[in-house]
Structure formats: structure tokens, C-alpha cells
Image 1 (cartoon, rainbow, N blue to C red):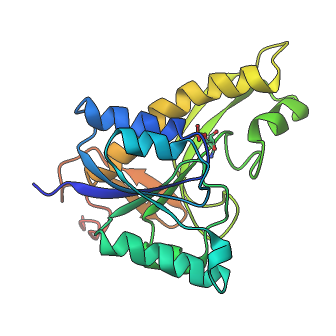
Image 2 (image 1 turned 135 degrees about the vertical axis):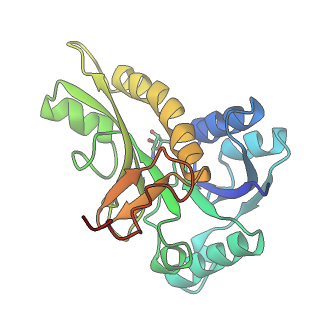
Length: 218
Ligand code: GRF
């Protein structure tokens, strides 16, 4: 069986990338990590790719005529490698339309808050400042907005009295490392379907109960 090929976009330390690598290495996730693309030549995530023999490309927007040109080029690199799912793992940019259009409902992101609360930067700090008692993380498909696409999986953690940003972030990150590989696994098994702005997770064998089939009359 042909394994789903995945391209990862990341800008920083890459702990989520590592959790995906680990899930592949353990055999839990049956996909191929084809390429890492980073916009940051100094990112530690590059070391992780090197260590695991995953191709990495440094592509910086400043080297392209426009933002659209940049994302067209990123999409081209991913298409060249027959990538079927693009995974954003701490990629610190809003994805441009050419990439989204090249991979319709095939770009995922993870956000460190329970969307639609606290989108954008510092989701953990926003949650603390607001005073919520529960926060968490969200895996969602990427559209052109800022963390606005259909939600695939969410997981919650308590916000404890005395938490600072670091403590809450660590609690959330531990969950991120579980749910991101899980969302990718569901996608790779064909169980993730976008229906309007909702994502339906199908646990059935392929074809059975498909939401694309018309309802049976009577
Ligand atoms: C994570 O908190 C993730 O939710 C957010 O960016 C951070 C990336 O961390 N999108 P890492 O580089 O995967 O360690």
C-alpha cells in the first residue's frame, strides 16, 4: 500500500515535528515524512530532520518577489515530492492562498488553545490573561484566516492556580504531542472528512457510511 507522503512546515524548535517522527518510527503512524520546509535557517527543527534522514529545505520569503510567489514555490516543492498532506508545526506565518489552493483541506495546523478562543500568537498567555479555567490545543485545517479553519481534534487541560505561561504551555505541549500524530493518523486512514465548516471523523471502513452518499430513502 502506498503510504501518504507528508510535508512539514516549521520555523522553530520542532517538538511537534519530533512527536510525528517518533510516531512514525514506532510504527503507530504509517506515513512517509518526505520533506521539512523551514523559513528559518537557524531553526533547531533542521537538526531533527537531519538526524532522521528527512530532506530539509530552507525557503525564506525575502528571496521571492511576493508572498504569493513564495507560497507558490513552497507548494511546487511539495507537489514535486507528491505530498498528500501538509503539516504546519510551529510555522510562524499565515499561509498564502497559492498553498491553500494547491492543497484543499490538506493543510493542518496545531494551535495551543481551544479555538475559536485565543487565536494568533501566545494562545497560552491569552488564556491565562483571560482567566479561563480550562484550555488546551486544537488541530484544525488551515484556511486563509488566522486559526479559523475547521476543527479536527481538540484536547483540554486545566488551568491551575499559580500557573505561569511556561507551566501552562508545558501542560498543553504534552497534549499537542499526542493529538497531532493522532489527527494525522486519522487523515492517513481516510477517516477525516470536511462537511461545511465541520470535520467529521469516520471510524468506518472506506466507503461505509460515507457522508458523500445520499441518505437512503425510507
Ligand atoms: C506549538 O505550541 C504549537 O501549538 C504552535 O507553535 C508551537 C510549536 O512548537 N503552533 P514546536 O516547534 O513544535 O516545539
